Amino acid sequence: MKSKFAEEGKIRSALGIIFLPVLVYGWIWAAIGAPIKLWAYYSVNEYWSQEYRLSRVKGCGSDYENGCARLTLVDLGTNQTHSIRWYIDKSSLMKLEKKQINVIGEKGYFGYIVNGLEW
Figure (cartoon, helix red, strand yellow):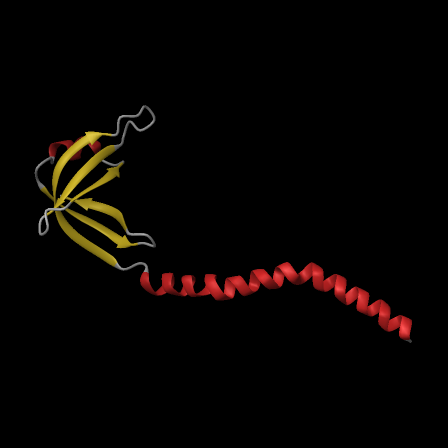
């Protein structure tokens, strides 16, 4: 009987060593990953819309981005400038320079994501 318990102890210790990384990963996920996922779930996808003045429109300047336009937007309230790249309607945006446009987006993990422009 003693040898049977000794054999089971070796199996348990071998399985313990194999599953120890899984337990450590689970503990780290529960301590760090789960709160971040909960925070993101309750704070992301807040939609926003704000009016800006389109101060400058120019091309991105690289060969593989022919349809890209670099937009410089000026906040009407604070006069802060923001720069974004936009890949849709480059020719239409060139005509709207120095005019007001409405920027529509949503709050993301690391800032705001622009989903659309209205003029």
